[in-house]
Length: 117
Image 1 (tube, one colour):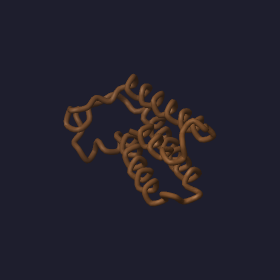
Image 2 (cartoon, one colour):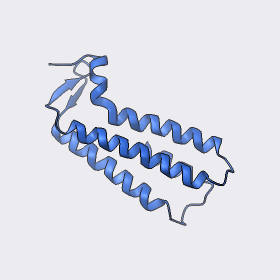
Image 3 (tube, helix red, strand yellow):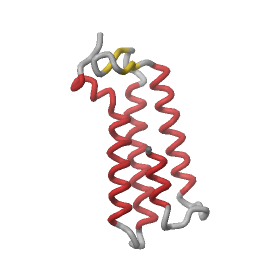
Image 4 (cartoon, helix red, strand yellow):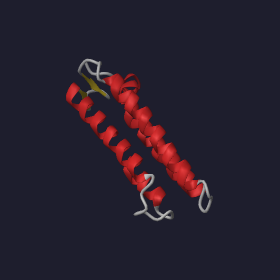
């Protein structure tokens, strides 16, 4: 059975969380331009969004297979596993990038925005 648009949104929470986190990280990166705590707040916001998306991805692992958005998107266990792997790997990259000196402090926000995209 295919679910409609509004009833499908609860199964699309990991992706919505990543999009909202991307918007917040981009906005805070622009707002905190030149601020001394910028290199601490942007990674923490990114890690918090990825952790929340990971939580929603784990919750979707127990959901049975189905079709979302009036049959335009399939929800299955393999897709849920890949979603969890991608979120976990992005979390690890964001965690490793915090102490890295390879990225200048000017472009660090861009790294986290591109990681969330």
